[in-house]
Image (tube, rainbow, N blue to C red; front, side):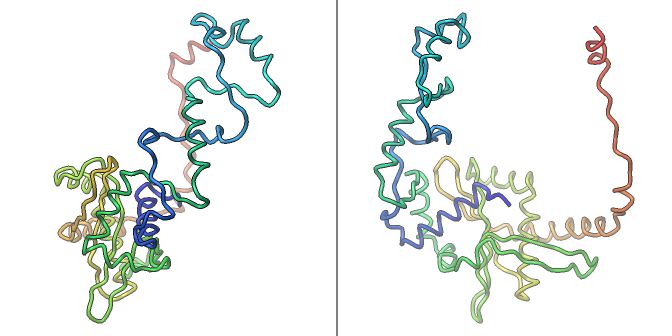
Length: 274
């Protein structure tokens, strides 16, 4: 499973927490490189852009002057895509090379957000969790239908004799307003996820967890912890109905159906005959 942007942010949070949020081992990206990403191909080989006088508006990269210029290049030199900023790429690679070995590059925006998170009392317990309790997979069989079930939880804080267990799921967002978060919970059915993960936790530990979403603003304006426990009973009924439908579904009958044949529209057929 490919990690989502939110999962990557969670990894970064745990990694920085392991370093006590000290800057040693981490390097903030300079402002001039904020949002810039070096094309992977640009990291190897010798790249050049054609001079402006050999690429005209009329001929582009097909004109005689351009072809002659390209022919004159050394064998190990490649022509870069026109959208590349070779000066900026060269400057970035030189800066990257100057960093100490193994340094973790992080945007100043993300570092500021992570630094705020370390002081939040609800997030403190997850800092102490081992790697085994991150992105943890739970498997169980649904009692009512017998269907095999699976859930992959971002962070699990197991319960203790005096403390309730906690599940945290990372989410990225473009807005931390109450309205927009509520809209996303409905639109993307995050409340189903909260219910499903809570059920997985209860199957393993015998008691429901305190479930939290941690919404992180992509624009660097911080984060918001969200308790959507009032949504879970609603999701439970919807998920139960879905499981019953899956249990009754005839997969064998579905698999032996002939493939659906889709013909091209008439205007494409007519164009072919012209």
